[in-house]
Amino acid sequence: MLGILPDSEYRRDVVTLCQGDVLVLYTDGIVEAESSTGEEYSEKRLATIVSSHPQESAEELVESIYSSVAQFRGTTPQADDMTLVVLKVL
Image (tube, rainbow, N blue to C red; front, side, top):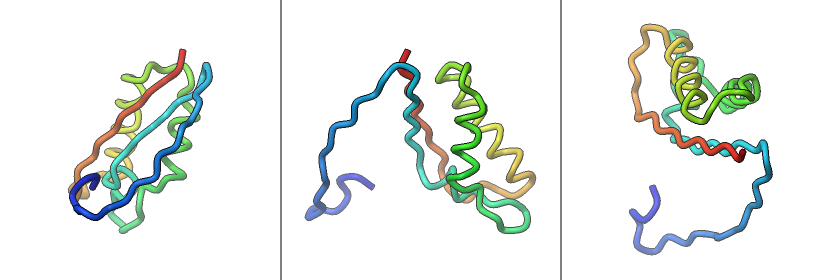
């Protein structure tokens, strides 16, 4: 968590985004969501959902990701928060 430890050091960097780029920021509750067999959703599944919905708006992409995670989990309770921020460069 940013800012929780007083002596934490953070690296600053600049990233240039171009038209068509998508930036997805997420908490670990997304990629660590578990199925009924204990398998984690994973960054690979997240990347697949993002790349398979290129025409969706940022808002629609958030809903697609949440729906995908919920379908993956099935009836397994969510054990952690799930937070997403999606930015699409038009």
